[in-house]
Length: 216
Image (cartoon, rainbow, N blue to C red):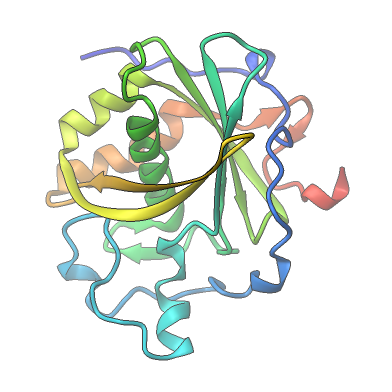
C-alpha cells in the first residue's frame, strides 16, 4: 500500500488564500444536527434521498452539504489550494453510525480531490483549508496528493454522484458531479475515520485549528 505522508506547517500557505462569501446568517443551519432517522440504511456518502419538506429536515441533513467549495492556484508548483466550508458548528456530532460530520467532510474532500485530479499526475497535491460554522472556525488543513486520493477511492469504491458547485478562482463556478465514497462495511468506515490523521496539518502560518477567521 502506498505510504501516506503528513505535511507540516512549513510547507503550507495561508488558510485565507481563497476567500469565501460571508454566510454567517446560515451558521445555525447545522447546529447539533441529530443523525438522520434512516442513517443506518445509508451505504454511500450521498445525500438522503427523501425530500427535505420542512426546515427541521433541512437542519437534520445540513452536514451533508458544503456551503462553499473553492479552488485556486498555489504559489507552490504542482499544488492547488482548496477551501471547504460548512455551516455545521459541531463537526464532532455523530451523523451516521460510527461516523462524525468531520469524517464525512474529509471523505468529501478526498472525492473532490479525485475529481479535480483528472488528467493530473499522482504527485500533484491538493491543499484543503477546512472551515466550520460558516467560516467562523478554522478546523485545520488537509493536504493530499492525487495518488493518495486515488488510492483511498480505489480501496473504498465509489458511491452515488451528487452535484457540487466548485468556485474556481478566475474561472467562475464549475457545476461538478462528485462521486462520493462507499461506506458499506465497517472496514471502509474505519478507513474513512483514519483520514484525519493521514492528511492533517492543523496549523497554517501560526493560524491554528479552533481559531476564528474574524480574529485575524
